[in-house]
Length: 448
Ligand code: ADP
Ligand code: ADP
Ligand code: MG
Image (cartoon, rainbow, N blue to C red):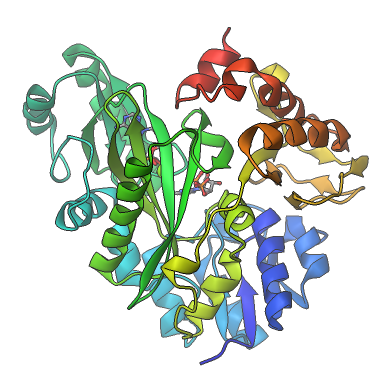
């Protein structure tokens, strides 16, 4: 069935992005919003808008009943979940399907299999994809965990099976620490994800985070090459780029082939990301997780391949076979994305909602700004602090860095502090220019 209308079950910059894709496809976009988002850019741009509840996400963007009611009221064909919120909630995907709507993403069972990080590790093993040494399944109690740690050795990472957004993760360097952190991690996982399940992995350090974009229609599966997301703070991405710096071709090919093998193993349908850690000294890579949704950093891939990933996922959801063949996916030049957050980098990244006084966005070839901003807009305090992303594309990494520097100088958001000055410094930092980044780079750099 072809999709003629979509309910955008999200907010912020990704809602705007989904509306744009719908417009390009000639699809009607209906935007849901909380009481705090009535004057959001997404609401202004959508064909229609429906209020679904009060400001707290638990009562609006995470309220499955309210979202389904909105879908019925709007008479849409499909529901796009964006990222975060309910995007990787298998019960939501099932409820959308049971309500007679198309869920723009894989079905509930695929999400269950890949969204649970332990189940996903087992799928990776079956598909012949290398995983980080660690527990085969969930570790049920401390005694079992201690036995596993005895075989893999310290340091280890304790991770929540249901984790996401960099939360539910602890590093233990010895048995005492492990004994202390294990119950803490379990309690945090239970309260954040309503699932206290944990697993244990060897700590890979130094490591680079490199991930592969995939597309599948249930029968054919392709990759759209990789993105490097090693620039992180608190295990959340801050700056992403593609291709990965100086990655040996053999490694890139093996990583991309692994991602496709994993997609094929589960008959994947939609857009997804297979995340890996890369150990540069050993030139080895390890699977860490799959994100069964569109990702924040998808524009990096769109800029270097020319593929519109959001349009692709809507077409696939509508039942169209994947029209792009692997050989059609060609990387052209280099792209860098900077996440612009309403946070004060001078004050430990304190979130800072408030009113945008002026907004000036440089325009030009290879410059893209995906955001929720307009002058006069008041950023509400209830949600994630991401305001938007600046993405710059050019023929190679050095040219791209120079262009990024220039563009950041021209990008003006006043009224509230943002992370723009941080990116401006990073773009000119000698270590960044030399490509010497890894997952602990930014925190070390910030603590200099
Ligand atoms: P990406 O690689 O797309 O940045 P993230 O893991 O950073 O992926 O998640 C994107 C957004 O979704 C972030 O705002 C993050 O906080 C949120 N998120 C991810 N996983 C979860 C989860 N399990 N529960 C709640 N929010 C999540
Ligand atoms: P999330 O679901 O929160 O995104 P991930 O499993 O993707 O969780 O891990 C987030 C980040 O934590 C990674 O990008 C990496 O920086 C770090 N990390 C995760 N697993 C390991 C590991 N085994 N060794 C070292 N770092 C890790
Ligand atoms: Mg991740």
